Image 1 (cartoon, one colour):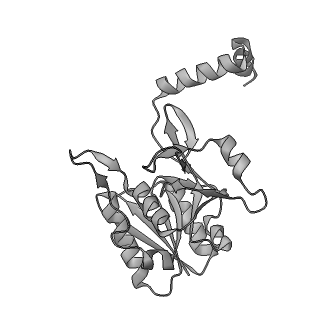
Image 2 (cartoon, one colour):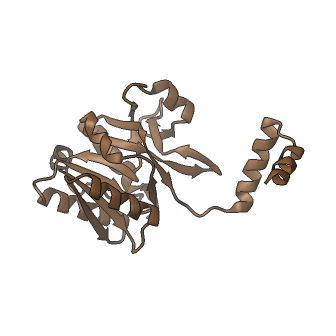
Image 3 (cartoon, one colour):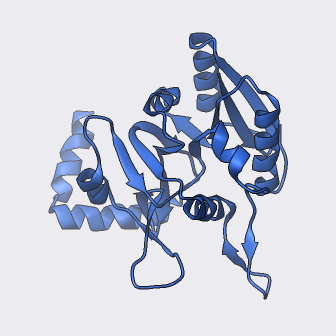
Length: 229
């Protein structure tokens, strides 16, 4: 049995709602659990508590309310790995990038470095789609029951600096705890989800303008496209 836990603040994407309906109809071993709570670390912990109380469940799929699944994310169970993330993205300096991290070298502190799409291509297993990673977000995250049972609570919590500023968010703090436990995290590059965000079209236009210049695409090309519509 698998529990799909959706932390939210009162709203979820309609595309996600449709996907959840289809998954629940397709798979009889799936239970949905919606949790409204703020801040997000408490929300995630409440979902974990509910998950462990339901002894019939072996897997918890944490799925954020702004995710738009493109595939059947429950297929990640077939790998039988302790922690597997789906492939989702964030906007980093105006550019979409996979929300996956690798450890930085040459420092005592474990810092995160983003993995590019090229890194994913080079490090991935084409047959399984699995890639070993050091850190992931929690937008699409599959966790096996024994991991949460062994990890010291709270599972998710923000780590603050002495001056009250944020040192580590709840998702990457969770990854740090997994690292200390010796639990290997994986990314399933075949389990994909869109990350719906509001976009500043002016900033996007600047990025696309640079892309057009880099690729050498002429303005006339776009004029022809418009005429053909």
